[in-house]
Amino acid sequence: MKAPILYIEDEEDYQILVKRILNRAGLQVTIAETGAEGLERMRQERPSLLILDINLPDRDGYSLCHDLRQDPSWVDLPILVLTVRRRPEEWLRGFSSGANDYISKPLNPPELIERVVHGMEGRCHPFTETANAEYSLIQAAAAGNRAAFEVLIQKYKGRVLDGLRHLVPNNAVGEDAVAQAFVLAFEKLRDFRGQASFYTWVYRIALNEVLHAYRRPSALSVEELGKEGDGGILASATCSEPLETTVEEKELRTYALELLHRLPRHYREILELYFLQDLSYEEIAKKLKIPEGTVMSRLHKARKLLQNSWDFVQ
Image (cartoon, rainbow, N blue to C red; front, side):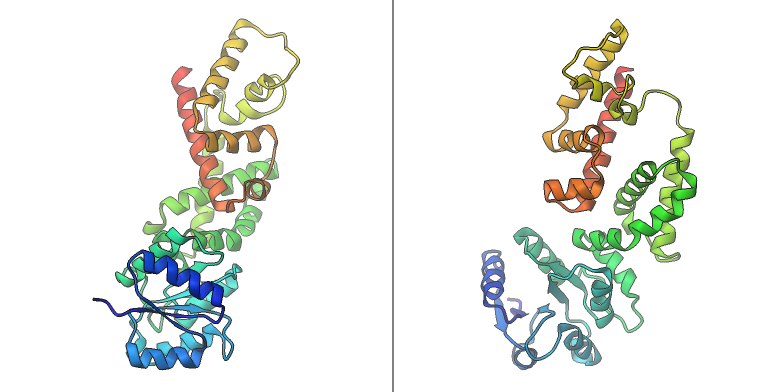
C-alpha cells in the first residue's frame, strides 16, 4: 500500500474537502496546518505526494517547496501546488521553486483526482536544478492540466495578437487567428520540445492561420454564414422581417439553419454568441462562466463541424 498523501493547508474547509474527495477515490490523506508541522510529518511518514498551499501561517509555500528541493531526500517527491492564484508570474514562480504541477481553486473534484493520480504514477515533468519554469508549465498543460494552458493563453495571447496586427485587416480577424492558433497549439503540445520559445512557436502557428485564410478559395465560408447583410445566411435567417430572396438563396439559408441545428447545443451556443451577437472570446467566457481556452476550443470544433457539413452540401 502506498504511503499517504500529505496536504499542508491551514483552511479547515479545504482540509475537509480535499480529504473527502481523495478518500472517495481510495486515496489516504494526512493533514498539516503549517510548514513546520508539514516538515515534521514528512520526516515521520514520508508521503507519496505533497499537496502544498501557498498561503501558510508560518511561511509561504514557494519557500517551503524550494527548501525541500535542496534536500536530496525530497528531490523526487511529487509536489502539487494548490492555489487560487492565476497570474502567469505566480505559476512560473511555483515551477521555479520546484513544483511538479498545479491544482487551481476553486476545486474541481475530477481534476483534483486526475492531477494527484498523475503525480503519484510518476507522470509529472520531473524537477531538476536546471529545469526551465516555462517549459515545466508547458509540460503540465501537455499532460492535461487545462488551467496551466489557460495561464499560457493569459501570458501570450496579447503579445501574439500584437505581432499579427500589421498582417490582418482588423482586430477581429487577428483574434480569430490567435484563438485558432492556441487551439492547435494545445492539440500539438506534446510535440513542443523547447528548441524555440513558446511565443515563437505559437506565433508561427497563428501566422500560418492568417496566411492560410488568405489562400482559401472564395467559396462561402463559416464567417460569411454569420456576418450581417445579405451574405449573412445565419444572421439574416433570424430576422423577423422576410427578405426578398431567390430560390437558391432560400435553399442556402435552409441548409445553413439545418446544419446549425444539427450541432450539439454547446457548439451551437458558441457559434450564435460569436457570429450573431458579435461577442468576444472574453465576453463569451464570462457569459457562459467557462475558461477562455474552452471558448476557443469549442468555437474551433463548432466551426470545423459546420464547415465540413457546409462543404458537403455545396
